Amino acid sequence: MTPQQFEQDLQPLLLYAAPLIFVCILLEYWSIKHDHGHHYDPDDLKASVGIGLGSLIINGIFKAFIVGLSLFCYELVPWHLPNTWWSWVLAYLGIDLCNYFAHYIAHKQRIWWATHVTHHSSEHFNLATSFRNSWTQHIKIIFFLPVWLSGIHPVITFTCYQIDLLYQFWIHTELIHKLPRWFEFIFVTPSHHRVHHGKNELYMDKNFGTTFILWDRLFGTFQEETEPPVYGITKPVESQNVVYLNFHEWRDIVRDVRRAKSIREIAGMLFGPP
Image (cartoon, rainbow, N blue to C red):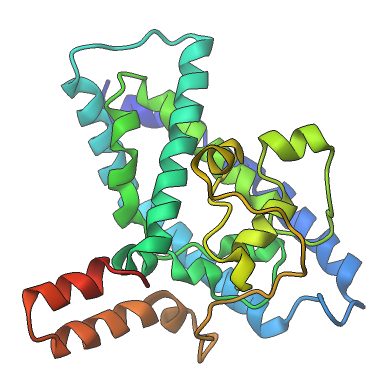
């Protein structure tokens, strides 16, 4: 398969979903505009949209490289799985599990946290918060190599990746309290994700799942929502400037590494806790 054929076969699901996404944000904005405790903050909203637009541009720039790498991995392995329904199931489960581990490590090691802190920088929690995807998040591409090396067709894995990403949009809201117990047991819900964005001591480093909360239940990182979350990061941001929000942790890392006195100290700064 050539990159040109790949582009033709892959459906731009994110583009198709864009009108619905903006309609949902408008409905949420209207629903909570008189709720002074949870309404949209203008500066926060501008920052979220600005970060989201920047992410779209960067995604376009890196798309050719990512497509080429996925095709290379697919051709590298000596086996190819058939394009059947169970390949789709395996691909989605694989993508979601890789997302879980990438998300987990991004909270445990500082250099990966620098690629993720942007998403947690808001002290508000609404659908627009889902736009806050770091401009350096593509560094985490290595966590998805197991799926690309599985022998599943790249069109299937990329489509599943898009669906998994779209799923994460609707869980960034306070309008939905709790869903049926069976759904809350299997899938990530707004309640679960509010816990993840909370900086309460009880909620720190919990609920890393993106579609399935089963991973958190299985690996011991699950936490039920039992108290109102306080959003944001433990060291509040100093500005809503989109460049600052994307790179302030990288700036701090460079500053600390320059002050380090040994390789061991540098390693601790890069791979120790944020």
